[in-house]
Every structure is written in structure tokens, then in C-alpha cells.
Image (tube, rainbow, N blue to C red):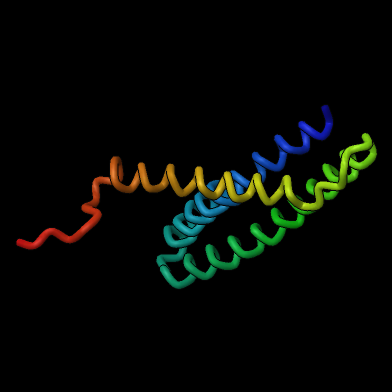
Length: 117
């Protein structure tokens, strides 16, 4: 049961990696631009924040993967290595990409291709 809970945390963490981190730093950058009037400062804050957040979140996901691996081995299963984390990351990236494509082409209101006049 605790291995399943670790998998669920990895799923939530990887979704946060692809969606939560970029959205949070875009919002923070908008607040920085509002406060300073400087697009450069907002972009710098967003880029630095995204990189630091991703590095931190990847470290947490790696730790969760290690704990999952230890639990599986302790219960007599074969050592899965980092397979669970790899599957979670790939699947969450594909879901995030699919959601983005649906949003962009269906709901964003922008033309996907330039329309000649």
C-alpha cells in the first residue's frame, strides 16, 4: 500500500513539474512586471525560479523513486530500478502535452497557422 502511495505522490509531483511550476512562475513573473514595469526583470525571475523549482522537484521525485524501489525490494519483488519514475514522467508529459494541444487549438482563441489576407 505504501508503494502505491509513493507512486501517487510521483504522479502528482510530475504533474506539478510539467504544469504547476511553469504556471506558478508565469504568475509570479506577471506580479514582478506589474510591480517593476520591467519585462526583463520578470523574465529573469521566471527563468531562475523555474530552473530552481525544477531542480528541487526532480530531487524530490528521485528520492520518492528510491523509496519506492526500496519498498519493492523489501517485499520480495525484483528490483525495478527507476522504471516506475520513468513511466510516470513519460505518461505525465504526454498527458500535459495532449492537454496543451487541446487547449491551444480548441480554446486559446489564437489561429494555429497564419491566415493570408
